[in-house]
Length: 137
Image (tube, rainbow, N blue to C red):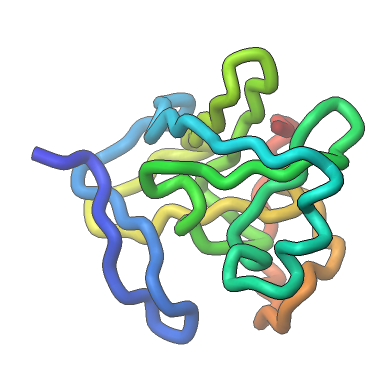
């Protein structure tokens, strides 16, 4: 049985959904990433990859595309998960920041810090609910 699945997410396109009950602190998925050098990042702007890459490296000048479901998690200002970058092993880990019931969409804050309300590059309906969680990626 798969622990997560990809389904339609109303108003967001595709999203990642829990297929089991996840507990706070549990790893949802560990994804290998493909890393692209800084000189290739500008080209992403002209492709569909622009909305799916992560800033990568100590200086955030490289780019990474997550394999598995890693590039399909939707953004939320009140996420139920966070991501953690592992530069040494070229991995992204998705970790629960609260319990997630089966069938709930798993969301992350694209700003890395689950509490960061900085506007992202696309229009988002701002959710004023807040969760007090000091963990960051």
